[in-house]
Image 1: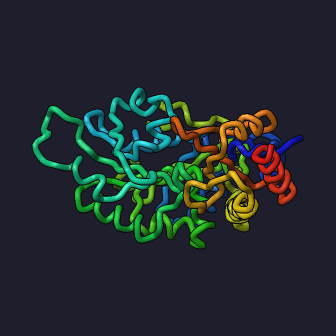
Image 2 (image 1 turned 180 degrees about the horizontal axis):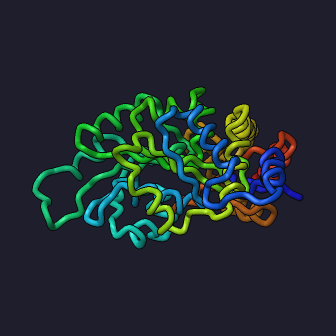
Length: 343
C-alpha cells in the first residue's frame, strides 16, 4: 500500500504496541483502571515525570484537552491560546460546549505564544463583564512543526505563575519535540514549570490513547477523576490503554518512534531542496514540512497523494512522516513531487 504523507494519524499501530494489546487480552481484569497493566503504565509515567505526577487516560486528543482544561477552570474563566492552536481551530468548540468556559485566541507570530502576546489580555478593569484568564495553553510541537525552546517555555511559565495563571501543554507531538531538542519530556514540562500536559500516544504508534498528566495534583487535580468521567473519557476496559502506554514508555520506544519520524522528515526536506519549484516556507524541527509549489504541480501531485493544504490564496502543503515511514517511502514521494513540478 502506498505510504501517506498527510498526517501521523494515518500511521499503522506500531508492532510492539499491538503485541502489548494482544498480551493484555487474556482472561478477565478489573475495569476502570484497577488492573495490573494500568498500574504498570502509571509507574512508567512516574519514572519519566516524577513520583508526584497524577495521570488519567483518555481516548482522543480532543477529549484529553477538554478534560484537562475543564479540571482547571470555572465557567467564568478562560483559556488563552494561539489563534492557530488545535484547541481553537480543530476541536469544533468542544471545550467551550463541555466546560462553559471560553477560549480566547491570541494572534501570534508563527504560532508560538510569548508573554508579550498574553499581556494585553491581563489588563485590569475587565471585571465582571469579561471572562477571566486562568490558563495559558500551548502546543508542543506546534501546529506548524516548530518547537518551543526550553528557555521559551520556562519564560512563559514564569510569566504565567507571576500572574496567577496555569500552563497547559497540548503534547500531541511532545515526543517529536523532545526528540528534536534532545531532552526528556520531563525537562520540557515539569522542570520548565508546566502545570498540566496532555501526552500524545495516537500520533506516536498507539492504536488510540492520550494521557493527562497533572504535575502538581494537590493543587490542580482534585476535580480530574470526575471531569474525566463526565467527559466520557473513562475507559471501562482500561487495561488496553494501560498496556499501550506501558509498552510505549518502556525502553524509550516513545523516543525511538518520534526520532525516526523526525529523521524521515529531514530526509524529505533534503530531497525537496533540490527540486525546482518547491519552496519550504517554515522551519523544519519535527516531523512536518510546509511548502508551496505551483498550483498545477499541486493538482498533479494530489491526483496521486492525499495531503492537507493550509491558508488562503498562496496555499501551503503540509507533508508529515511517522514512525513507520521508510527511506524508500520518502524517496518515492520526493520523486513524485519532482515529476509533478517538472510536468
